[in-house]
Image (cartoon, rainbow, N blue to C red):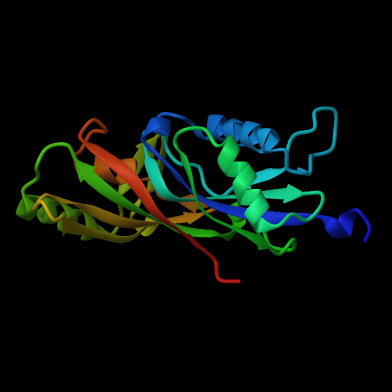
Amino acid sequence: MTPDTQVTRIRVQYAKGDSLRFTGHLDLQRIWERTLRRSGLPLRYTQGYHPRARLNLASALPLGFTSDDELLDFWLDSPCPIEQIAARLQAALPPGLIIQSIQEVDLGEDALQVQMKASEYQVTFFDRQDPAQLRLRVDQLLSQVEIQHTRRKKSYNLRPLILDLAVVTNSSGECGLLMRLLAEPSATGRPDDLLDQLGYPNTDYLVRRTRLLLAEL
């Protein structure tokens, strides 16, 4: 085989835990770069004066959020058994990153960001919420045809980005929110923007991403 035909693309599904809550997207990318280098795997690097390990993260997670379902693609110059990849990555992982699964994917797939369609989130409040009042806030928000929201001096309509929003109650009897938001390259909903419209400052809650939804191939 020629060098190009040996290239493989590996996808890692992982969780981002509490210890990395306040690690931003660019810093997370650097953490993965260091982890991959430490793993000793035959990484494929970018071209140019400053080559870097070729990798691709699916979707930026806002600062302060945790996640059960993040996706990373990286490329190898030669094939390796999945078990070996898993063992080497596991040995190099920092606290806060937990690998859920590893698989080889087709080289011809679009970038993860292009495949993104939606994200699902679970919201937990620090203070106990009244279920009836929370449902009223949600119903009032969803009844609006247009929800103008301003972020960084730019105004946009939040309403079409909300695919689903529901009040849920956990086993302790405390209520929270489940939401599914559009996450396409040109239109991505943020849970903190939605919660701001519901009247909750970011000091009132914790957000965990529970699922990434990709376009069907």
